[in-house]
Image 1 (cartoon, one colour):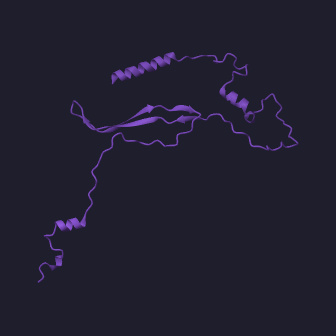
Image 2: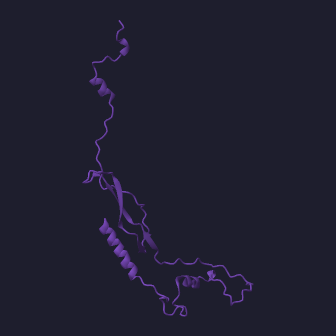
Image 3: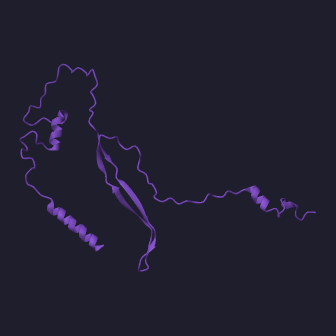
Amino acid sequence: MKLTTMKSMLLLGISLLLTGCATQYGCKGMPDEPQCLSTTQAYQVTNPALTEPSVDQDTHVEPQLQPSPPLQQPVPKIDDPTPIRTPSKVMRIWIAPWEDAEGDLMVSNYVYTELEPRRWMIGKTAPTLSPSLIPLQVEQRPPEKHFDREQFDSENQAFPKDVTAIGHH
């Protein structure tokens, strides 16, 4: 157990050392060149309804005298593929009760492990089936026996059918 902890601590330390801290923005033209914008700025530039007037601009806007004509045709749908995040595939493993070398009883428990991580898919439809648990081993049980009254009566012929007739002459 100590070896696993040491390996994970070493991996964490190496990853922290390899991450860099920069004092400057990664885009050399930032903020002067328009092709070098942050994601928030690019979103605001492409959606003019969301932009707020700057302090330099006159905030008084003349109202339009004529309303714009309504669209006669619907806006066409963009045929870009839709990004979809697939669910991860998880396996549940049952660990049966067991006794260790020192005679201690370890009770049963479950371990969940991820077989396939979540990932992005582009241009495909979303999975329609909901995730479900599928057992890896199915216990076979013998069919249940049903009570058969006729068979019971035929096997027990030694007893009289009418109990009230016993002892009455």
